[in-house]
Image (cartoon, rainbow, N blue to C red):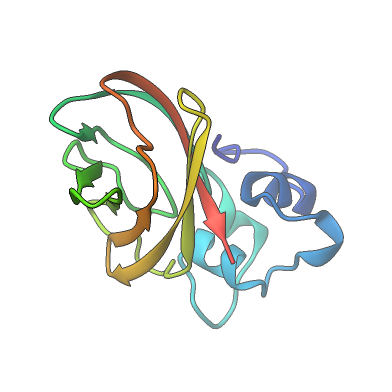
Length: 153
């Protein structure tokens, strides 16, 4: 989803975009500031127009990776963004998310939910545009995968 690019916008819209309950959100919430790409100082609802705090898409897994634009917190807008899965050979998989360009402010964790496999993994921030974690089972499967990215504490 993406917030409207024009017209009125409410904190309820922002909360829904971020998956936060409305009473727990304000313009100074760190995820709201990251979404607006304004880490400090003055911020307004206009700063949030057209922003995307989650991403849902369908991508084809080729060679263990999905490569496509994944707009998320102001990053991931070009075609070299990817979700990559590597079989470590010991019953674990390294799952990595690379967003290019890197989101300018968001450094929190990211949830990858693959509705094709029903698997979820919380990816930990590593460096600008890079999140990763280990999973005990395969998250992505060959072929089309329907998946969602959203922020996580």
